[in-house]
Amino acid sequence: MSKTMNFTNPENGEVTELPMIEGTLGPAGVDVRSVYGQQGIFTYDPSFSSTCSCDSAITYIDGGNGILLYRGYPVDQLAKNSSFIEVAYLLLNGELPNASELEEFDTAIRRHTMLNESLTKFFQGFRYDAHPMAMLTGVVGSLSGFYHDTTDIYNPEHRKIFARRMIAKIPTIAAAAYKRYVGQPFVYPKNELDYCSNLLRMLFAVPAEEYEVDPVAAKALDVLFILHADHEQNASTSTVRMAGSTGCNPYAAISSGIAALWGPAHGGANEAVLRMLDQIGDVSQIPRFIEKAKDKNDPFRLMGFGHRVYKNFDPRANIIREYCHQVLEHLGMEDNPLFELALKLEEVALNDDYFKEKKLYPNVDFYSGIIYKALGIPVNMFTPMFAIARTVGWCAHWMEMIGDPAMRIARPRQIYVGSDQRDYVQMNQR
Image 1 (cartoon, rainbow, N blue to C red):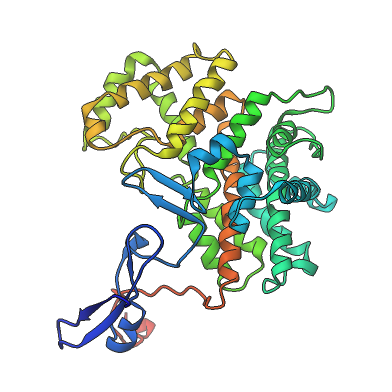
Image 2: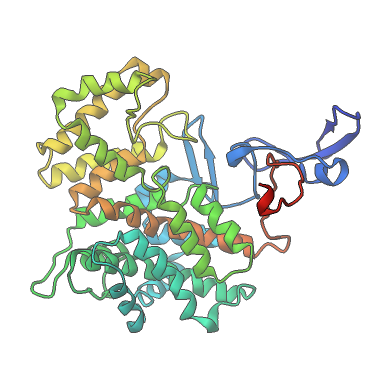
């Protein structure tokens, strides 16, 4: 028997029966679609923090208990046992691949990493100091003009080709944006390298000498990408879904997600962590800044602590914290002043009653920024690295949405608070 609840209009007593929508895990939802049609009343939820925009089988988050599942698999198990490419297959297809399926998928990704040569010239149109995210947004959007023969969004085979092509090319685009920024020649991908090793080589190799990929760095990057691959209906994923609901070219939808990710409240958080550490400056200043963070009248905030969804320890942070310490030890950077400062700040916050009561634990952005910095990745490339990983989730959500026969264009409503209707006033009467 299906569950329902009633909505009663306080003005006229009219009752509308609302079906309850239950998922596999987590809170149930109330289907409010009939309220406006029957009663002429909108539901109101600024920032959509209590509103489900869709049902999805991709990712589940339990913020209270610090749980993150991809297609039902705990993210810590995937980070320990899987690879980013295997997780990408899982998110796109719903199941873990067998050996032959993984080989076929991995080969397809490796063979789609090159860019159309004319596309590489687009980077020269950007100023030398353009932010890499600006280049990413523009160049990914331009892919709409290159693949007319495989962008029928209602063709399942075309959707599969798009997702593989997008996942394959985003590291090459990000690396090219970085090379443009630093004034170095582009480095072409190599098919024999795995996903993260290929990216590191495209970022740091130069024609004058060979580049040896550090396997510890590649592994840390692979785990970071797994942890960032999807995170349910966040701002950028919701943007991709909303743009995609119009039926636009899928590359344009991904470009819109990249633009949303650029915001400092979303993908730019790990950049903010490094700026905060620079502001604190020295271990001796930590107590002063801890007190500033506790003062509600002080604008200073500890960046990389706490999370909008997680009201417990971010499960991704638990995993990447270990890799953070491994990378610093491997690279001999534990005595580096910046990293010493970060580790001391982590220790103080984890043992401070105020932060424990407020559940302001270090999140994945705190540790990812430290790892990126240790690997030599500049701060303005942190968000592009996030975009590379999250492209998998964006593609999975776009495919899920477009494949749903019940899909309709997204069209939120509003409560109008402007002027009442009024007549035009002639210039000489104003």
